[in-house]
Image (tube, rainbow over all chains, first blue to last red):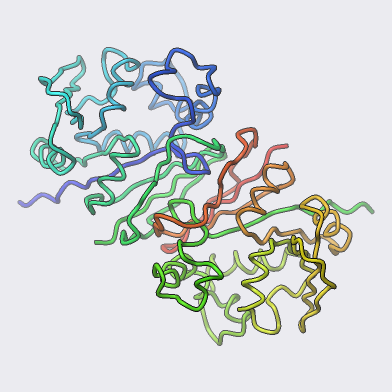
Length: 217
Length: 217
């Protein structure tokens, strides 16, 4: 029996002016959340996430939480993800802030110049370090992805842009958070105008509008 | 009986990377639609509009057209609009391309340095030229708006940004069109991070996702 090919997808929370991280949220200011108010800005972008039951359980943040559509969305994204791919900066800040049991519970491929042996964490997350680009990382992800699971580009923006512009993404969701940043890390910068997209669905709560797009190949 | 105050709103079609006009779409290249393929790019952004029955009738483009949610959305926006406000560049390109019966059928206030007498068009559109800024234009609009109608900021991006950053907007809709431009006129540039927003609704067809936001004052 032939299996359907795993989809490559991403989902990301963006401000209304198109940023996925506020100005000042970088490694140099990680210990200084007052700088440009980056922490309070980022918290506005992510506030819907921290309220969801599934997210709270997955990060062991405690009992309770919302159980509506926003929660189902997070849970479905987690459950469909068999492998994640991320950039070096996302890994480095995550390495610092994730709990010891990193919240992936799958193989994760990290795009980096650094040569490093796989790093196993408790709970089933293993980080593999890839030195030869996005197509190689995707190829390695396809080899290990299990069953009918999909492959998620976890971020950051630059890695997402590389996969989109290379025509490798199948679908994506933008979680539009109702906040303006003014400055920050731009989600879609220097995009190719030849990418052909159609809308799959839009669903909103008061705090976030999820719009899912399919790439037309 | 006290009337509810007219709302100030805007609605605008944006590419997924946040542009309301593609690179090359300017007065200098108006006669050269091949330049940076600006016309075909713009047509992708607006393709859902041209298919709608209400729009076709309003611009006298011919019979027929879609009658679903996208059409109702355009019709509601038109019907609630008692006065429009626009910037000088939007007026100048419109002056060139609108039919003689301009498609507003209401007073329109144009923000400009030019001193010019009101310009009446057949069909009820009168353009008034305002030389002293966005608050003055809004004040003049409030004086002439009729009954329970609202005031629409028609564009462009710079005028929208001025009204938003001045805290004068009550609500807005972004019509997200599934297209990437790469470069162009940015909808939300230099936004104040103190604007507080919540989501009112999101509705999508395959061609466009309408997300409506309310400003929290």
